[in-house]
Length: 628
Ligand code: ACM
Ligand code: ZN
Image (cartoon, rainbow, N blue to C red; front, side, top):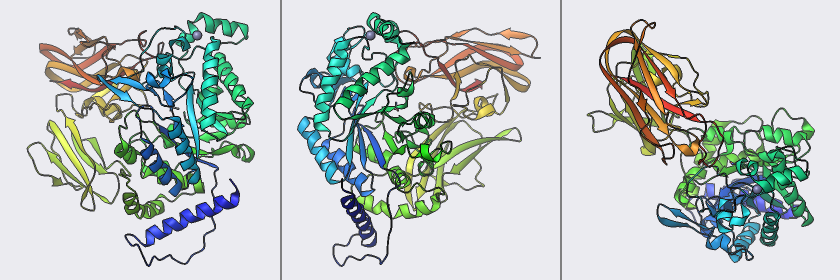
């Protein structure tokens, strides 16, 4: 693209923004402020990844996104087109990829779709007119179950598999020992190149479990013949072979930071997603880097983990790098994975307004970013986004429900996400919302606390419903003999006795996670207490390696020296049971008087064989120890 044309294009986008801001709902006598702008982008690569595999988005939606990206001067659509759950790109040589690979069984309904070659070419052309390049992502060697479902000879086992209809990381990946896999991929890439003229092809490379390769004769033969040390070097062999092929066609590869493992292909661009350390390592070895760390750039994450301010604070250039190394950071992307984004409205609410923050970071790369100033300017964009048909989401989690221990009682407090919000709540028998103020006292009682935030008189964000359960151990001290994970601390040491119950969303801040360890903890009730029942609430979601314990043992004691064992409680569900499940492990012992309660789990030590990612460690998730 000649630079002059680009300068005019971005200048025209600036003028278009200024016209919109100064002439809302006017069609004539448009006014522009008199001003002078000298401005240019700091990063060359200003992208958004859109996953059209987990959920499918129409050509019209993609065009809408291209227009919006371009309006905010983003210039790369990273188009995620192949996955375990669906292959979306028509390839003439392999028709099963779309007849079989594009559809999955979703609760006994067929779900899927694909883009024809003419649709993709039309999108490429449309993007070009908006000064956006499209990088197709053709995933390998992992995330390839849909292709394997279409052509079973591509896997190590050769067995027939279904297109995945669940989320997670799957162990069926392309066989690296089978030359016909490379023939397949090269033929696919030949057709991909015809559609997408941009110089880069993204080949994925992330999350490829090595379980099949470890147990495959062909893969092991390849390792031996090429003097490779292990399966990581085999992955590196795989990526380098594809990289060489694409190089012969005048293309370069981009891969997720896993492509560093086992040795990096020479001209590969690394997209750093597991933090920035992959990007740092790649830049130090002289490779170009795209930054999209989960910490700031994952727009599929909820507003609780990645609010607008967090995105705006994104610094694509790590301070660890020298000035020369920093030049290798060509830019960044926001990643929109769509496991839990079902349609365009949900997409809008996840992407906006966060895209504006990302766009500004990648355009300006400011050292000192002033979020308040950005937020003020952002407000002018909302009416324009509305006119452009964007069902934008919220900037910040509207409310946090805190419980604090005060004078041996729990204090429930609502903390609003930003000053321009007002909170109202309903509690127990109260059916109308009550305005919340700092002095509001929410009584210690069991029930669901319902909170709604308002901004300028309108509801802001979803209604929050937080269950509370009051019982004899509430606000009592927990001693941990085994530590919880800092990744899921919930309410730290008070978590298991804070009366706040977890919901089916395991990131709701109520579930305390224990990684690769059993739970062994003791509650001190501070005085000898009549106890009839002990209940623990556990969570299972096997997609995320969270399993129920096999059994739980409860013990009680008057003096913490002599202990009485209660009946062991067994898991009533199966590790295989799908979905997000909560289970109470209840034990009764009506004659007990005790001061101390100890709980110990016996967990599933290893992810079982049938699980898609065999060999990994497991989680236990617990929210409350209920004593009655
Ligand atoms: C990724 O999020 N698996 C790149
Ligand atoms: Zn194999």
